[in-house]
Image (cartoon, rainbow, N blue to C red; front, side, top):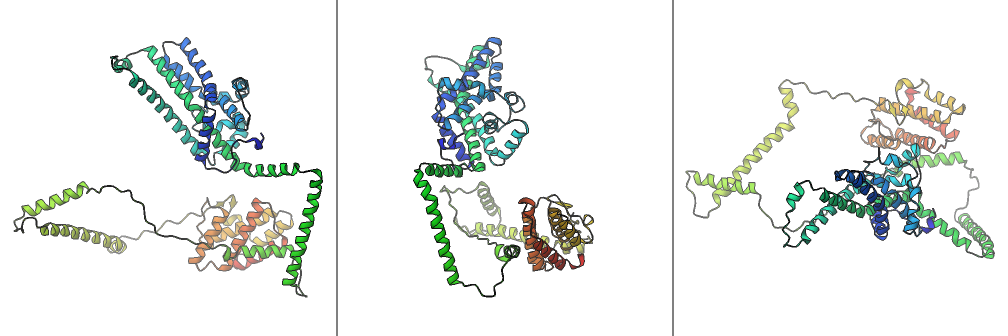
Amino acid sequence: MNLNQLTVEARLRSNWESVDLGVLLARRHWALMAGLWLLPAAAIYLLAALLVPANPNWGLMAAWWLKPAYERLPLLVVSRQLFGETLGWRQALGLFRQANARDWLSWISVRRLSFTRAFDLPVTVLEGSRGQVRSARISVLHRDGAGTASWLHIVGAHVEMGLLIGIAALSYLMLPEQLEIDWIPLLASDVTLYTWVTNGVYLLAMAAVAPFYICGGFMLYIGRRVALEAWDIEIQFRKLRERLDRQSPAARQRSPRARAAATTAMVLACSLAMLLGNPLPANADPVTPAQAQEVIDATLAGEDFHQREEVSGWRLKEFKSSEFRYPEWLIALVEWLEARQTDSDEPTGEAGDIGPLLAAIVEVLLWLLAAALIAFLLWHFRHHIRRGLGYKPRVPAEKSQPETLFGLDVRRESLPEDVTGEVQRLWQAGKQREALGLLYRATLSNLISRYACDFQDHFTESECAQLVRDDAVQDTRLQPALVQFFTLLTATWQRQAYAHRAPQTAHLQSLCNQWREVFRDES
């Protein structure tokens, strides 16, 4: 696979934009793909017509069920076309064995009803993945794109049905009026030839839609690979390499020297400018990498890097212009009020006087307002009313504390009595991950038990740190020193757990000292 020969621009696209690109690709190669799809489908259909001529629906069912087998060869051909390889009918048919070499039985059995078939088929046909490798690959691809692939499947099925109905309606409209043919008895009777012809038309409709379905799922797969493997960046690097290779040998020899000389001159100039602008003090002490890293971590854990701002505003909504119509219930209400005023014994005013009607409307509104006010008062003072009637207030159920967070045991009984002593012992024994994990677990356990931090099982480390910062605004027990220490410890644990970057010994000792300060009675 040569990315330089890709006939489309490799860039990040949304899922539906990738499907639209697949539709354009299908339009370019529609005749070849539809023909390659129709050849085996028509063979299966004609074979069924010879074997079971009295049951035409069995032939259509067999042709429909084997659709994944027909889609493999068009998919392989269009993948070659996408990378600039021109294929004719002879070359395309020569790839039939390669397209159906593996995993075809699963696609016509256990995976036949998969809604993401067009999205998953390239993993088998183009990558050749099987078993657990295929499952892992499908899991990665489905993180973004499975929903779009399912809707593509649903839309494709409806387009096939709509195309069949359209062909049937067009055939009926093309019949001349002189032919008195009533299609209703024809449909109601068991006409075998007519059923075979109708099923054959449906097979043609499936062949017409298949290239768009295949290319839509294929380009959705290509879009996911561009996002996962950064094809756009790789292509740019390849172009830079090709441009360097096209230079003459003398120019390639001069270029590194010129770049090295320019870089050296720039570094010297910047160093001279910094020395002239900010001379170092005579008694300046050198800073070790561990001290610098500790200062950087403390700065990143400060409040300046965790500020959030929410912006909201009003804007006018665009209304569609339409003729206003009074609702039927409002018209019925006005008619009822008019009838009520007419049936009353009180004398009315002159004809056309709307005073009594307005008075009745105001009366109804006042009654509604009074009912709403009574309901509001009852709801607002519901606790006082319950106590007055002798009911005891409901005691909220005690929240269950999580026992594990992101795989770490945070139960109190799982921690040693001397946490920092055990952390230092593990650190000296060369178990950096276990030592830092114990300090982090002990901190989480104390935050849950002593400060009632509502950590959930699905929280991540960053979400736990954000929850502590949010709770510190309302809970005065969470001192700024504790919040800053937990944020710094979380960042250090994430680097150890996910980047495998252990902190310096001095940094760990500083964390232990801070732990003793914020949890004095726990050390």
